[in-house]
Length: 213
Image (cartoon, rainbow, N blue to C red; front, side):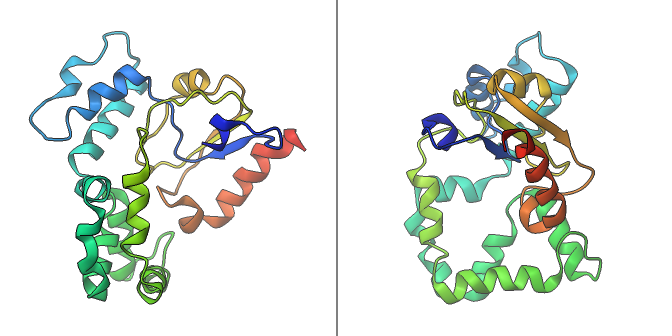
């Protein structure tokens, strides 16, 4: 949104979850949230293999994003999260399939980007500050699509971590960010890249803004 507002002090933006999906495709994919429709059958015929793969990942997300629908429509229903640390942890850990796999592996003694203590520390932070419910309100207050292009004109950089919810095709990134100054695909990391792979994330930030110094 800073990129959309483009205040004069803003040199550029960096994102690892880019908003690049053409609005018509994005609207179509959202019809699959209920599981009744199959939007993949109605995708435009001119999509590349990479663009279609991106649509398949978004479709999968919408079919497994009950947490997002609750937070978007009924955030105050989650007040029980303030009564049980186990309930809060259960809700927080089941965010997306790749992140859940990573977390489960850490608890099984196979830490990847996150350790068992990293995960428990994060849940504890929300529990001790009683912010499990208030943090959910962000979804209800957001009136924009997660994935659709927003009209950013300022210099923009995109870092693609392989387990992110959306792997944005470069073709879409170049269309959504006409002033694309950096686009790179990493070999590991997911939706919570800054948490999971802080060194890689910092390297990407440095590379992204080097040309804007």
